[in-house]
Image (cartoon, rainbow, N blue to C red):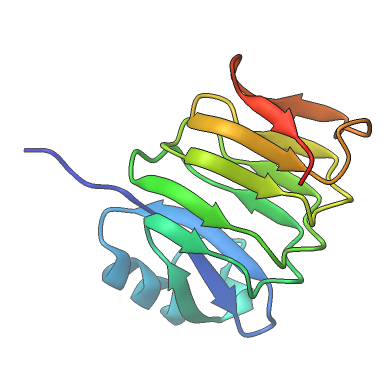
Length: 144
């Protein structure tokens, strides 16, 4: 029997974000809300689940500074169109396809998009790459 794992992002009452994985999202969120999950999240008092797997929309997360995605075959796309404060994008070993648009993220210092199925990564300035920039060969890097 195969277990399906989901990547999730929680918005906390203090407006910070927590990312994790679970095979039972409803139970995991209940545990976070009760303060019984992840020692670094118990003081944050989780308010709501933002998303699970598939296409994750983080366009409303303008204060997001770090995005960490667990290995997940179900994560296919991310919308980061307003995540202007993003400094670190760490999302290797997923099923991201098509384009990854990081063009509004002008302060990125770390990007790991390796081992996905991306065709292109769009950056604000291809002459000013993040200090650490990992991606698969064959991926086109371009400006908008």
